[in-house]
Length: 269
Ligand SMILES: [Cu+2]
Image 1 (cartoon, rainbow, N blue to C red):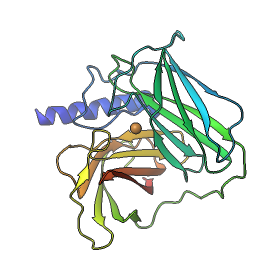
Image 2 (image 1 turned 180 degrees about the vertical axis):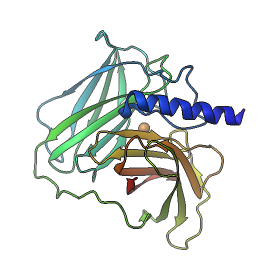
Image 3 (image 1 turned 30 degrees about the horizontal axis):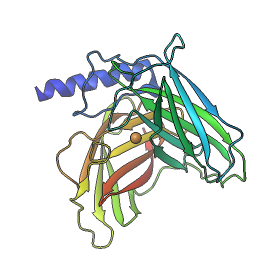
């Protein structure tokens, strides 16, 4: 049964990534599986930003999600505890934020945010219209006025170990090749004493989340762990990078009620 599930999961991923590289589905094994692997509901989105957003100033954004006939989609599934997951990144991928817009009804989501500097930002929303098996993705580029941050060149990390908020996090891959199933493991230790952290807490219904975005900000993968078992120090994700190239990956893990975001830049051969 387990192997059947794995095979099914792989097949869904391959078919879906072939359909639309931006809409690569979740790759969790525990996640409810769709009836058919091409279960993405086609959508449109309308992003409304009032005025001209300026750096360091909160501004409101509303997103209207419609179907192909431009009728607002009424119901959304709650996936990983939320109806919509929204990722905000700067063009150079140096800035990253993961938030959850509020559902207002009648297809409309709402959030407020502020960006730390002027420049171009990509807003990537992920949601599942009710009855759709796999999440839909809609994105929008936004220009923010103000002094731009110094552009950070996106180069692959030489060392895949980072210390973030007292955690020493190492990233390792098995079978890292574009178009193939890769396993990506984060190992989390206490930066002070190097002891493995074994008390990770579920964050949005999983032992961690990972997001990968290609260097051109065109390809987006939201990845969930392969298992709910264990609370660290290792969290393994399974995914398919659709194309070769540079990707930035953010792992998010919760311990003692606090979420840490750990970024890595990798080159996928
Ligand atoms: Cu989310």
